[in-house]
Length: 494
View 1: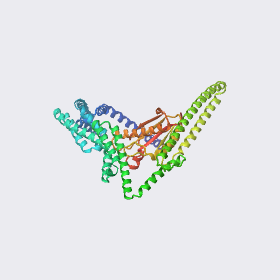
View 2 (view 1 turned 60 degrees about the vertical axis):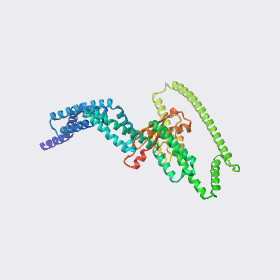
View 3 (view 1 turned 45 degrees about the horizontal axis):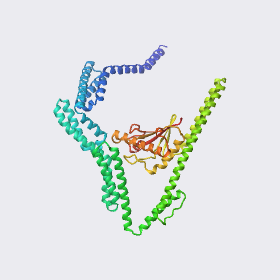
View 4 (view 1 turned 90 degrees about the horizontal axis):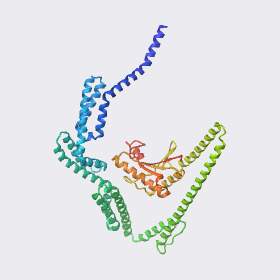
């Protein structure tokens, strides 16, 4: 009997042991917070004032000393030594924040130049210039830390010059760099000889883009539009030159080329149910196509008007139904609560069934390679895996129009629901650049839907998240490809 009692007591002690360990751990955590909390808060304040950048040596020294104090605590060393080191850290952080304050007052323009060069992704597009500027920036702050204000000002002038030049070069490379390469390739194959008008137009547009940047480096959006137009003209000129050279090599090819053009017009005409005649050229068939398109546009507007009228009628009927429901509700007030609850559940079930039918319809609209439909509570997300953009651009290519037509059908299934277009990117490159690019791509899809569906602008929202919300591992190309995406979020309940 005594052995049994002793064994039971041993089991109870073993069971209580983990609880004791956890309690001790909580006590240690609270003690560590009491000892290190205020100093950690001061370190956070120093970082918030950019102290790690504007007073790098003192900040680094303080962080090293803070780490030593934490190691002392873990090894159970005396609190007196730990407290001494933390006081030194507090003193250093006060100095860091004071130095940062002086730096912001004395070197406002330099700090702004550094921030703007980073925003332009200068470390990638102007690596050498940025490296020189960054080193000069660090030298400036170290001289400021040591009290050498004259030396700091002298070095700051050099640092700002490097960083401003790096910013401008980065902006130029990101906006017009690819076009210059395209022009060089075109010159190698003598495009300017065979398609001089188009080639010259492309060069002029590029010159306009560069002039815009030289005048105002922050007008990059306007310059990018010019650069994209220049790129199109150079590609167009290259195509024309290839065709002209081919025709010059084969004189009989002229007739084939004209017949091929006529066949293209014929193919388009068939879509409008008429056969063109070319005995007087292609002007008349093209005018017929234009008239047919105009007629279709007018029919589209008429149908949109009819839909609007139907919506209005439905709205009036809904009001009537609502009024009738109120009357019925008043008549049914005498019925039991159970019947009322049952009616509510049936209504909810019916609504869920309707939404489920719509959702199944949406899920079957897209092929796996085109999009993935993801349910998220009362909303669903259409992940447009098949929609891709040219690198660094936000232009929607014609090959994706059929996919966006399916997206329009899905949106029409929920005619009153707001639509959110989300742009996402991988984590390669500058965060600000990725954020801006993802927002521009989201706006491109937004404007496409508004233009092709006649939606009010306040119904379709576009937002860019950059690399903030990855869905795959950015460490692999496949993961980064999945992260570069457009998501369309639509609530099922309206």
